[in-house]
Length: 503
Image (cartoon, rainbow, N blue to C red):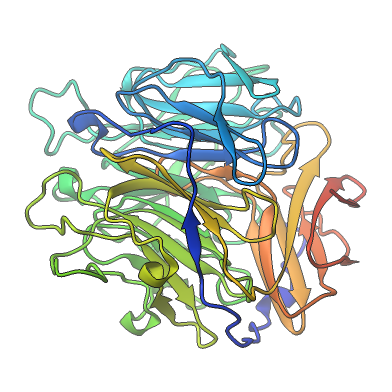
């Protein structure tokens, strides 16, 4: 990387709280439920991306034993069921332009062979080959990155319990798989072992060294002992990192990963969901450490009703719900099935970050404290009004979509970094926005969460700011110039040349 932004080291200047979050449920054209037996206790992700080309994102939701579903966005929070290949046993769905043709493709993680779907335009999809070996495992986790000099992405699949192990499921964790490009497609699979029952994985430049490493969040329930969270560095032969390199190998019931720079120092904080307490990892200058309880992000037990048993967290996602310039946090919650030691009445969390950096619960007042067994989710601007809406996939209950109707929100900005040639969506780029003494950095990633991801413009809340500046640090390390732009707009910026355009 050529330079680390000095601006991102400037502490964020906290502004006043702008609004109390409010959401309204949206009627959907189909009752979509994530179904299935024990092999679908986990998974249930959702992909959010624009496949119609109108600037409004579509939704593709995993169905478990039921087929996955595509909901086309007609504007005004009106959705219709789109044509989609009838594929069941899908745990997770991730959008990515694999062949860099400008049309988004989809990765389906499945109980059984994983599938790559090539986008054909106007929300059409067909099975692709590309030399990809889909295997026959249980893959609820996925992430992707472009390694230096490669025209095709490296694809990583996190595999859960080995279904063929006669001594399973306990202490029968499967290995993980890495698919590195070989010409116009993929060669033999690289095995990442040991595996400790992965449920979420994420390529991220957490060390800000100009190269993404692979974080793996593992489920202690099945590896029982001897396992930890993992971080793989993609040298010629992938290798695990440890405490000497700034990575603390914590041991939790890992379910999901969320990554966002919360402090303005240029290093992403990391949220790890789990059974019991959720773990926020912060950079202290030498390594990542657990954030103190007082930060308000542990979300240990249900925040409404009377079930006092520990919560089970799944998808976590940062997003500025009220556009005050501070990232908030949504956590999807729900019992695995009927685990008696964990809460059955376990509403989702909406943790709003205050000016003091402390997160405070607001899901019940906001109208999103669903008591269903939630799994995957997404915070995304579905109607183009600059406010982040919410999608939640539930096990044994219908999928939910909520419209953000919060009044008095701040200004906002959205930025889509794009490249000519390979890696069209600039995975690995950092977008920095500064306004009124604050600087925020966001990284373009594919993966994390639980079973799904977005491929949308990066959304920034601006508070009262009206004249922000922005720049992009591109995947090859090139630092673009600061550019003055307008609030309340969505922009595309193309590399090389850093050509900014209002969409």
